[in-house]
Amino acid sequence: MSRKIKLIWDFRGPASAKTAEHHEIHLKEYIKIEQLPLEITGFKTFGEMHAVAFMVVEEQDMITVRDALKPHRGEVYEN
Image 1 (cartoon, one colour):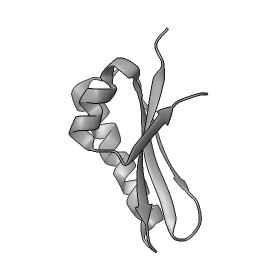
Image 2 (spheres, one colour):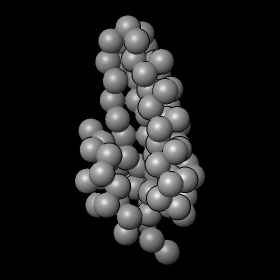
Image 3 (cartoon, helix red, strand yellow):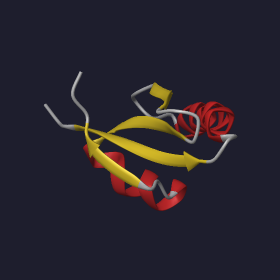
């Protein structure tokens, strides 16, 4: 069983929540176009000035997706 990696994009400022929400739309489009095996995406707000968008990929796909989409950071995904 391979690990899953959560790729994260940070957004800061008063429009961060809307930007993260919109970024998730593009992540879903990328998953569909590239036919990736997972469809876990989302966004989360950490206050008025910080939000993140994220997508979860299989570890073997991480480098390809990372190089294409340039996330700010990543972590091992756990349910």
